[in-house]
Amino acid sequence: MKASRIAAAAAVAGTAVLTLSAPAFAHVSVQPEGTAAKGDYAVVDFKVPNERDNASTTKVEVNFPADHPIASVMPEALPGWKIDITRSKLAKPLTVHGEKIDEAVTKVTWTADGKGIEPGYFQKFPLSLGALPEDTDQLVFKAIQTYSNKEVVRWIEVPQKGQDEPENPAPVLELSAAADDHHGTASAENTAEKTGKTTAAEDSGDGSDTTARVLGVAGIVIGVAGVAYGVLAGRRRTAA
Image (cartoon, rainbow, N blue to C red):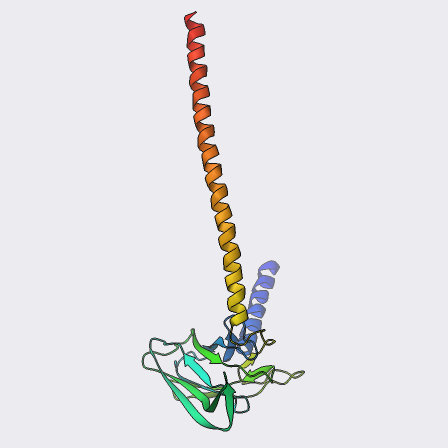
């Protein structure tokens, strides 16, 4: 009896811990697909969970940092969502690939034309961004989440190092060190080099495989011949 009561109490306590800790993880966040290097281009995913049991998320707005504008923003098409991109003139033009850019994306809005994000689900909203700034270690994107019951949650509080996470933290994209070549040349060369090595290895492997197959077939033939010889020799002895 005592054992069953202890087990039941432990289960209740565990459920309470999970219930209390869940909201800390259920907020809008952003993560790169791979790396997000300074001065380079990256694909990032904004992950939006539905925190309500009686309403769906029908609209998501992501605001871009004005102090670190990004000239190129391309969304991925998502079935069931309408995508709007807002651009604004820059007070200080950017220079990208030797060209001056006088406007940048300031907001991307996804509006559901179907069910949206239903209770118990989350949705990823991918964006291709570039070129990423070189003078900061992170980018803060303030997000606004709207539910089907007209409730609006503003994920706009900037997390501070050394302090507890705010109740409604803004998505923060951490940037890694700048790549050798911002245009991806180094990466392309590395890829080509790796491809060349792989091809050479595959060619070598193919040669080895062919040799092994020939030797294998030869071994089988010799083995069969040996067995046949043994059978014939046995018959001769029996006949004698």
